[in-house]
Length: 193
Image 1 (tube, rainbow, N blue to C red):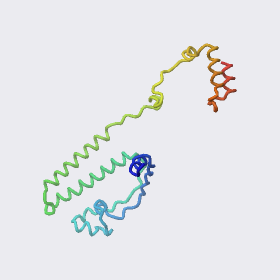
Image 2 (image 1 turned 45 degrees about the horizontal axis):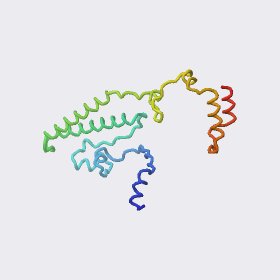
Image 3 (image 1 turned 45 degrees about the vertical axis):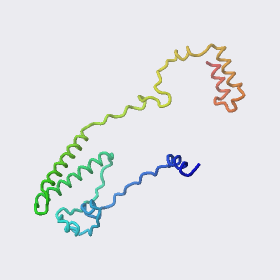
Image 4 (image 1 turned 30 degrees about the vertical axis):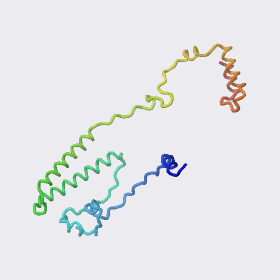
């Protein structure tokens, strides 16, 4: 088998690496430089924000330890925070029309932010139906099994002579090197039945 053919089979069963835990390190860059992934000189305001004419929006946000919550809540809060930040930047741009080339494009961006915010609000109001308890789910291997009464089981048991022959055949079989049933314990319970 060639390496190419072998690769098709081995790639499927590779062990996935566990997710790394994200550390909550303090932010040393301002939010604008961090968003642009640029180096920040950590001045107030930083030189990068001054060059871009955003000295008033240069903020160093500290990390507060959030209460433990679900990832959906964290992601929703992240979207809300980012939308608020974007709205603030756009409104500051509108208040300085000399720096903005197209006031119409800024207004379109504000409308887009409003639309996204409405979508986020609508999604948070929508309730997710809870999963049914495991006892109500169908069995994966056997499917849904009908409830059987003791009387149904007793009527399915063959007559005593037939049952004796089946039991002795099972335990006398030459191919059953390792029986799955403990012989003495089974025969004792069988006789009591």
